[in-house]
Image 1 (cartoon, rainbow, N blue to C red):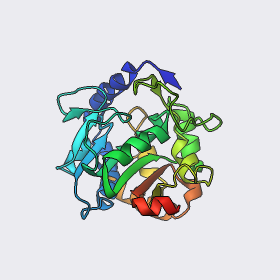
Image 2: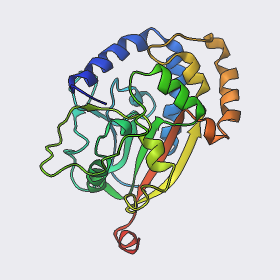
Image 3: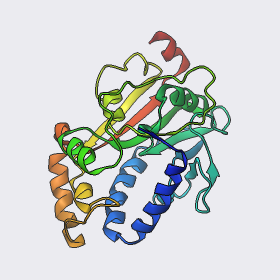
Amino acid sequence: MCLSPEQHNIEILENRKLWEKKPLLHKVYSHFYREIARRLKPDVPGLIVELGSGMGNVKEYIPQCITTDIFPNPWLDRVENAYRLSFDKGEVGNLILFDVWHHLQYPGTALNEFSRVLAPGGRVILFEPAMGLIGRFVFGRFHHEPLGLEDEIQWNAPDGFSGEGAYYAAQGNASRVFRSAAFKDELRMWRIADIKCFSGLAYVASGGFRGPQLYPEKLLPCLNLIDVALSRLPSLASRMLVVLEQKAPQEQKNT
């Protein structure tokens, strides 16, 4: 799916208004952000940076995180493009992408840029839609972005690519890349340090930003307990967290 790039900022501004009206969503997202924060690698020197920060909510859980997006907004720290980052080589220790991977039309080109700015042993932490039964049903039926499960993933950008492009989305890309062996060779410079799947029942039943809230806030602890049980079955997942760790140069050569 490709739309005008301005669509990205339109959605951010719309989501910001909806976020303020839905306190349950704050609590649901706090669980996801804490899962991300637990996987930061503090012994790696360098900055903590989030790409595609949108509303900048990560700062509530990781205050030192530098928030970025492709459009300027007053609550963000700086403007960044995932394909052409302004950070110096090895300047970043941990790079966070929350619902950004499925907007990368050329993920291999982006990963090469991530590798450049990451310190040795640095991490890329992704939080994405998962294509388990719940994810396929909810995101496939009730989300405006396509799953893209049958579309070709263009790993590298074509020659002459400027780093700019249309608004791209394919929600199934994280599952296709990290939950199969199809992209093993393309990921040879990276170690998959962790993959955790979440049923995300508390999230999907909250209605997200635009859907109806299906349970009162006081029942969230019960939904969280059900989530813990269902998340043991990746085949049900609607959300997934992936931790990529950059291999040492010598290890890359031997891969």
